[in-house]
Length: 386
Ligand code: MG
Image: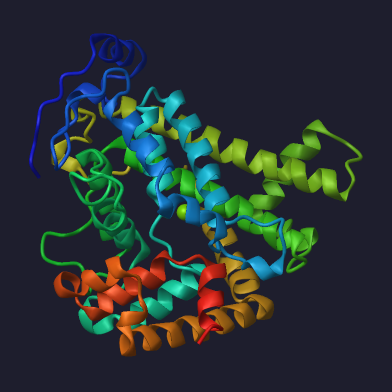
């Protein structure tokens, strides 16, 4: 990576010096951007990154993309955008509690699912299959393509030209999600900044909580079934110690609040202990010590981790593989597969910017970039417009 030194306004650097821990990623220590830019007069580099993501087309499209349940199933459940906001909210709480860089954390949270295609993981599986001869498709890697290439908002450079720490954080996610057979030599996931680890943990807190809530609202589950899982049973016990005579709805909402509060508190307590045990390996640059960079410090206690795994196993079999969900999944996958075949046959039907990139990116990848950027709604419209 190229490196460039940024000179920040003194007030900004001083503010971070007062508020952030020595092991946080301070803006004054950034390695800069791939395309060097002068510092902004009053926004720090990660604050600028966050603003660039919020103003991007890919970010807005998250509002009409599936998280787990498609739009035809109702209006209550999470979209990819509201999930992203829940992750950012939890991540900022964790970050502030540990005196880490909230601007960097928020940027990482806002881009973490930016690469999801229409129809969530169902769409991802189709595109991965369609692209298997040219490296496959992974939403975490696609988020990098979006912020480095596909967004065209500035005349001076492709993409959003985000800070190198933001790109490195998303690269970590992309490498971590690769099956070992696809990970190249020396390309194994390295855990770097604590701000990156925070977003990973917050993503897990958010989806473990809201996927169950959405499934209840959609009547794919009943509360009594969830209360049989150890995680929900313990959260309900804690709620019961504070309240009596809650009705069904009140109990459900109280347990959801407790689940988030419990997981976040556990992460903070565990992180404080782990960070305190490794004071010398946390350098002033905020990086986990080079002698043991794979050590994840932001993770739940072993007991809570076990209970989260049990809940995820339950959700996988009872919710993600529910016949209603599978039916929507199959329909969406058929539509996306047909769209891929159509644009491979007739790439001239794609917008000019995707057509132009075929020369450098290849036909399959360019068609995939076009399809992956679609919202669920737009993909359905295009599918029926043949
Ligand atoms: Mg996520």
